[in-house]
Length: 451
Image (cartoon, rainbow, N blue to C red; front, side, top):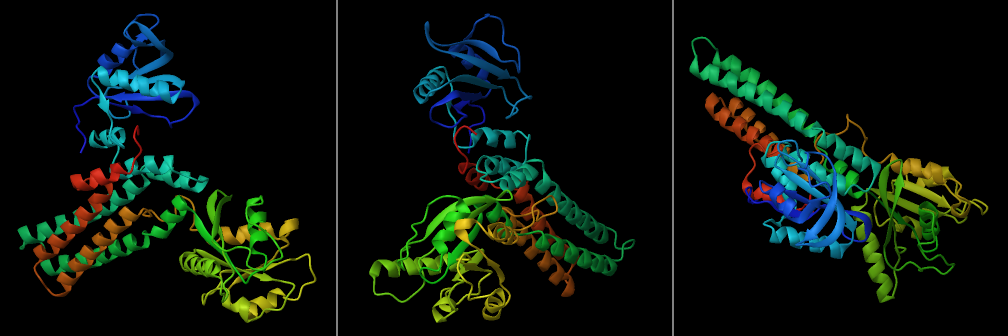
């Protein structure tokens, strides 16, 4: 857990060479420590939220010419006094400045400690704190959009509404228990039962861990097919480069090969696989096993067929006993033997597209097919998509179900109230209102140092 009264320091920008690096401080001693290391050129008191030009000093020796800014509480990221030194982007220089700050009385920040202080000081809730790291790690436009919605309180508002509904139910139960002559207990029980069911249904419908994983990690698309069907050529065409080895020799791809691309703001992870076939080659057998594992975990299974050859048993076995989501008829520059109708007859329910990878024909249609397998993007999409949020919401739903069972079994309303209070606590874990210190520490341990 953080030591809230310490003044902490860390590099806020990524390591490596760059035009500018930022070193951040936060805590009650922030201004005093800053002025022991930074000397403004004009020697006037620093104004809050105004960049000041000066020198970073080690005693009387100039370390760097830099800018510094002071954010006095509560108008700062952490709601404490915060200062930043904007220096030249050298790792060696940043290390020296940090050492000077530590000598002046600061200590190194723990991972995520700046954002943790913002949470503990009430500037943001836990879902918004998590969204900060989600934004930093966003690998696509869609992931950034999801992080922004979460930072702006979309998840918080949703959870707050559900909690308010449960609190209202607890109030009705309390009234029925305390004023039995004025409130009919059986009628209250029926109302509580119906509203518990409605809240539970709404929560379950809003949980979609798959959406969160796809937004953050990307849509997993696995290319499969018999050897020399054109998988590697298709991969190269989709990523726009020569990443996979392409030859006329069957079995060239002996391992899984994954590359990420963007389709309509969505991160898509394309995996080329070894052709699934019986082989005596030990190395190729490992590649085939990995290909099968990738197919089992795929969001989209893409079966590549050589459109210039008839579909045979090896083609049907190449999908590893699963059903393809998309069938790609490759080698469209050769006389077609397999038509879309033939592919649909063999693989009903799949989407079929014909492509010529070297010429780029059919690739736009294929990209649109891939994107259609991703969850909807936008404010109306699933509200709870992060794994931690979904797990807490599902536990809340279990407690709501227990409350409904208690009413069905004609147990006293105070038994139902215990289950409703448990559901309330589970939802509070999402925003941090009823979170344990251990879980809070676990959440912020995933952050980078300096954020």
